[in-house]
Length: 277
Figure 1 (cartoon, rainbow, N blue to C red):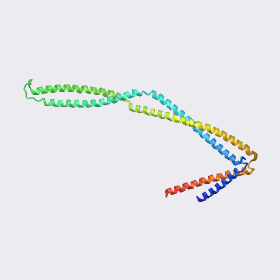
Figure 2: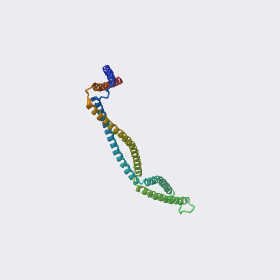
Figure 3: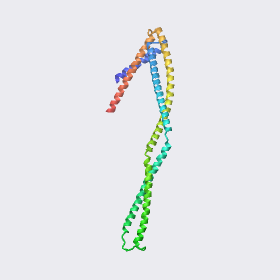
Figure 4: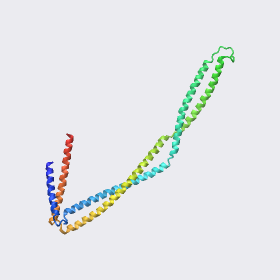
């Protein structure tokens, strides 16, 4: 690291002296091959950057067009989707299910009541009377229980019929309404997300278009500058002190950049080593 630091400092000092010498020379506008090399690299850099932005812009436009097409298809599908009808049917099915649960409980209670009345009827069957009289307590209780039992049997029958009717209606509603409603909700969310993405893409498209316009102007200016330098270089070339000095400065600048990169790598390696130890 110390060796790189010393080499870097030495070249920076030498570079500073050369640049000072160049600026003190009255023929600083003389064009050297290093000036053309710089201009060519600048032109190539702008051109590459412009091409990348144009590629990004094209991909963004294609992606936006695809998303807009998906939004249209989603909208058409959602418009054909009678969500209110589905919600009503789901609510009806849920109401039927609640009624079924409630009615099953009622039927079970009424059946238990009927069973109790039948058991009581069995107990009231024995009687020592040779001929049943109106005053016979067994006869009186048995008649009362029979009336209750007949009434309870009718109630069980009516409740069971009602239960069967509701069960039949419920069984006919075989569609999974919740699944369809959830699907509708997912599609609505998907559509909203696509609309947001298209909106963001439009903003990004405008930004890229502005960048492309700026780069196109820069590329034109860079090309004009390069052409001008080439024409001026044709006149004298590198056969003059100023041009030769510019070439040396250009080469020395490359050495400085290379050493600076090496120094950064060494520093990063030392930092990694210290972090591990």
